[in-house]
Length: 472
Ligand SMILES: Nc1ncnc2c1ncn2[C@@H]1O[C@H](COP(=O)(O)OP(=O)(O)OP(=O)(O)O)[C@@H](O)[C@H]1O
Ligand SMILES: [Mg+2]
Image (cartoon, rainbow, N blue to C red; front, side, top):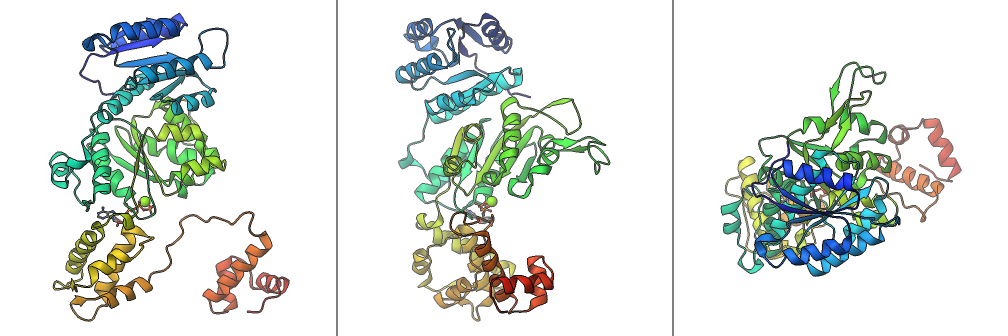
């Protein structure tokens, strides 16, 4: 299912390969749009300029090839793209590239292309690119003036139930979220741990035209590379030893709905390429099957890591990044959200006081400014936990700074979700020693418990203690 846009669109196809151009044109015409073909960049620019004189007659979208002569460097395509972007910045351009020239596609995305199609494509994929690109163009060219944004206005338009906050930075996040929800565009949500990325993903789904379909959440950090394909795409009976019967994967379960790829920054490289393929072609096969299925899903992903940094370090594919990141939503850390800290604290207090039957619980007057002064490294999640503990621990109904401070001190240091070994700073031997001494401290020198926690025998632990010159 690819939803049709009601408007009849005018599409320009720039490609010197007649077969490619006319098959694209046919597809667009069959979908009720008009398509015009040009075979070379100069002619394309002339046509855009001529039709641009009449606003009714202007093109809505350009699909362009990257090579127009025997050269296959893509230079010609890139220069056409930058000419178009210079002269008509709001005219969306989708690139047509050969599979394998992903670097070129990435260059194009950096130079302002809205999307790229790789040859050979499926009809689904072309229409999806068209719908997504126009959806994004439409919502992003009509920005709501941020001065006039209010929570009430947003609530009148969208369902942001359960999302507390009216700080300006948060409202502009909600504004973007509301507007992009209704498109088919993939959305990448970034922000520190506990800032509300999952809540935002749910809000996008709730406000989308896919809300009657499922929202399937997948924590990619928890799926080892060896299981990635069967988990995401499913398998048929007998595909491997443990495959006793057919099983649907996550993409199939999410059909007609939305898939939420959480902790995308933790995905192994070998799995990234498999994910890229399904996002690129919108098709996949179950493990052990040769039947190709269509992935009818909207993709939302989230991470608390910096993907650009990961790309730099070689831990994340740049082409996958551009696939996921057509729209990005960044959640500011709680410490930058001003009055929202107090608003959220009161919200959690009210909810939790009810839950724990302490209906009269309230903050004393010194609390709000104290809350605002904290750095909240664990963000909204941490604030909620601190309030919860304070409600449970406080003796009276009035919660003071002391109660909150005590609740804060009891917090385990923000749990690291992914282990980040200090490569280059430590040797394996040193790391082993650190790990052993941490385990010994945790179990107060109890040898059996320490060995069990480290997954080794008592004898092995003694040998290691001796090796490192340590005493329990
Ligand atoms: N604006 C908000 N209003 C109300 N509750 C919120 C808000 N933002 C976050 N929360 C609450 O804070 C907690 C953490 O939110 P969430 O799980 O969405 O964070 P996250 O960004 O996905 O964190 P992580 O990176 O650790 O996965 C949840 O209990 C959520 O309900
Ligand atoms: Mg999360």
